[in-house]
Image 1: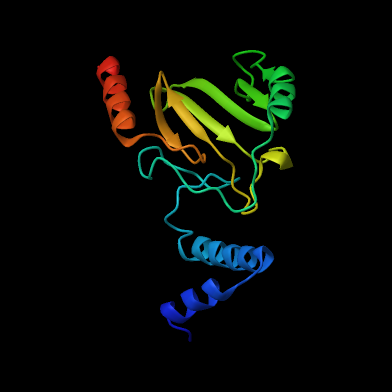
Image 2 (image 1 turned 90 degrees about the horizontal axis):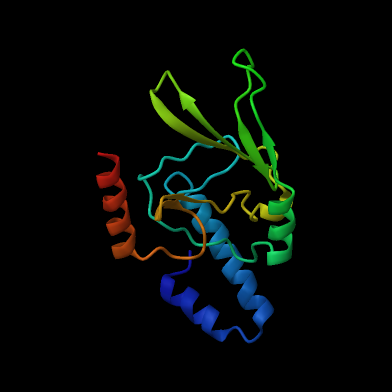
Length: 168
């Protein structure tokens, strides 16, 4: 097995971008494997808890979130799926880019509940590791984020405290 110094020397000796990118991709893949249980990701069928993770996550190499035109088209064709009656088994949700966001009153947990279903997410939104960039905001506070844009730690905690005060 190579030592860290030997690996660094090898990387330093690489002369073309393609080789360096291949090393970076291999390292990223291995990091994702090693850290899979601890990283804050949101994937179809994998729940995420707000407040149990760091506020941001590095974007997998090569992923580029869709451009403004794609986003505008997806947002302008969003569909609201209402409950048709109190006896309806479904829940109200909005569908944007294949992402289903449900917002409803849950008598069992006695709270307004928001859930996100990613099973039908548009492929343009899926990163190479099958995760989806997700950012949750309550009021003006970002309470969960897996997007590439960092949330300033001081601003994040200040906003969260403000939201908590408003709730009491």
